Image (cartoon, rainbow, N blue to C red; front, top):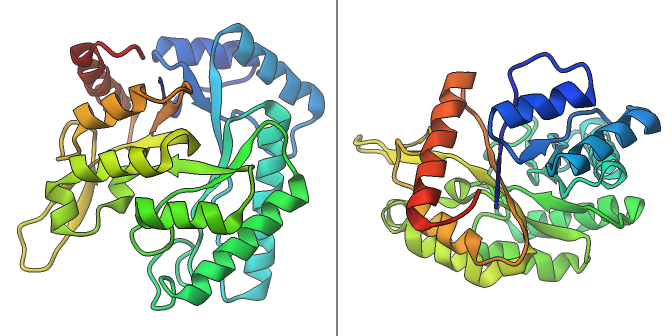
Length: 278
């Protein structure tokens, strides 16, 4: 597997980008260019990554393809198509988005209609539309799991894979986003094993973070830096290490470079403990 995360440095060339990644100990990276980048620039970053043994893990296409506002929905689908095109151009492993939300208040948040069969069918239709518009040959389109929209569990992700029925659809695994009950929180090792048992080699990329459970009367989960929560990283890394592919593990949602350094340090310490190469 490969560790990656965002950079907090000014990047003005492929060479500077590679050097910044290497200084941080990363062998995986988010896509360094935007969809409107010219072919020469895209090719330069692709070559630089290949020569430095860096994998471009993901192109983010964060938007709401399920919005109840037609213009927002159309623009989101267009953004996903352009993101997948860029991923295929630069040789990224995947383009990633959440499925979205049926509301207009939040592009990724909860809504009463999100976990209905109607919404499941909409996700299938929309995902097929994005993939079929691009017909990628090197990259895949993926959906990040969320607690309140499909895919919200390993089983619902597998169901989506079968329903979408496209070889260019893959899994972006974020196990923290699948923890939405105390039982899953306290036995997240079992959840992790189920993810890898059901989804296996369909897993193309992962997000790495951690989670805590509050002590109030109402259930409240909080996202924290890896190592400060309850996610079973030993099980997570062991299962990842069984996959045939060199899967990127991407750190996210931390406030500054020092927090990312500490997160990477923790994950690397677990990997060393388990004899796993990052």
